[in-house]
Image (cartoon, rainbow, N blue to C red; front, side, top):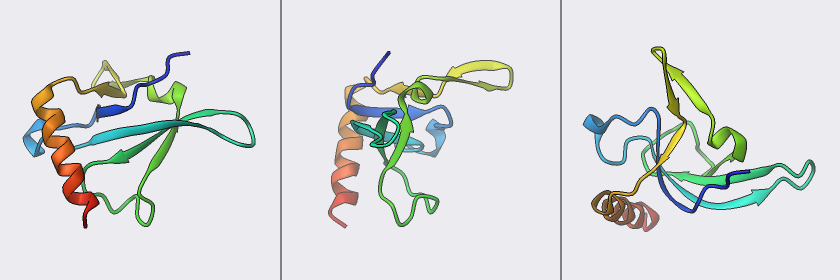
Length: 101
């Protein structure tokens, strides 16, 4: 089973024209469901969303984290790890800004 590394990821809905943090997430760890043993990725959105409130983090089963989605007939990864050091620095700075609110 593939386990995602902690770090920053873009969701397939990321739209660069809406900003570097559009649909950006930080994976903060892997947890195990206490009842059924499912491994879950915990992650924090780095963009504003009312959907999550009042929670601050999401969880997703590992196998769903790495699944593919069909968008207009094209198979895309659900999440893609961000490796661009400039973007990572911007996301870290943004995360620090929203954490201090």
